[in-house]
Picture 1 (tube, rainbow, N blue to C red):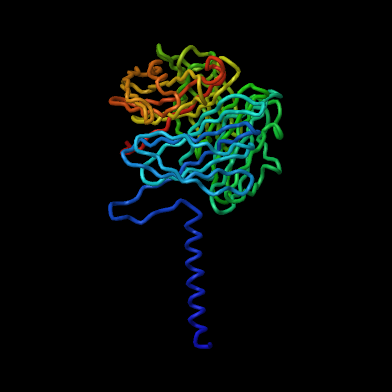
Picture 2 (cartoon, rainbow, N blue to C red):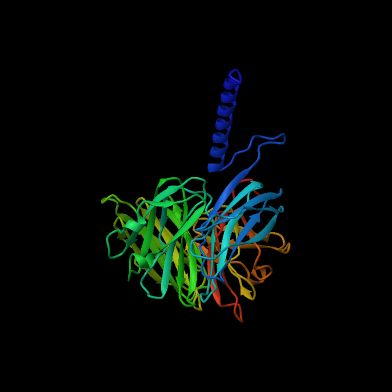
Length: 460
């Protein structure tokens, strides 16, 4: 037995090292050794979509524009221990909807993909005495600093929230700072050093902290681990819902915010998350439509002090794009639009690119789908639109003039309103968004807008 003791100790040490290596692999994104046919491709999307009372429905939307099949693994997080992930196959050139758990405000989903690149977003349909539809792309990364402009506590009927998810196998610790127009930045005890267990989600109602403010933006600072965050706006009883994924780190200085189909009212919600007292931000913007552009009201020579947020209203006519340029760090913006019924929408900004996936913004039939194409550049953008499977094989070409905004033909949009679209430019670059109505007697009961997802080179 004494002779066996060194061997036993060696085996115990080897097992311990092996277990540690395996646990470390489980914490972050997995990597794979190159196979015989080349290196495997993989990635992950983070979807802090939130939810509500029983009757809410949330579908993840997955688009595979490539020539090879993709395998996805879906796991939904909440306040309770998560269920085992579900593994699905996404065929080449196809689109798939995946229903996920939506009971409770604190909800988020993780989609890991293997093989072919996929784009992922969500569409939520409120129920349980609440109404409206919200659609949004998921985030391709988790991180340590999130900027979330879209929040308000001006009305007693609104219930805006910040949804934070921890999709990893170690605890995350973060703090939330709320920024408004009239108050100093707020970080109360329940918002400071929040410990979020692995594979969990949490939601913070803004009305519990700041009341009566037209603008309540949030900054999430992570001290341990990484998280993903978004805002969820709910107007009761049936005033609609909206979602906006946060910005990870400092956004680019110039972004385009497409929109369309609204009632003629739009709000540009801007936050300055800088903590430096010298971090005042200068703003400048254009409102571009089908007939060219004009200065965005109130933005000429406007500036925003650090640790604050502000809402700039405007009226619109037809499909329009807000092009915002900022000078300063940690400045983030959301465009909020209002449907012709009671629903509302929020869209984050994008930089022009040559190829995009546009996911649907409808929650069922009947529907009135719309697809908006923005060209903030200096040359025309010639864009080809085609459906993924199970959509039809029809294609259409749309030319978007420089500094203009155009809509996809209605006859094309109506062919398959619940299927993703591949939008690619043969010349120029552009920024697309889905802006759609759905449900009700005439398909006009709910309204949602969702920015497209840029495609990496070689993904189609």
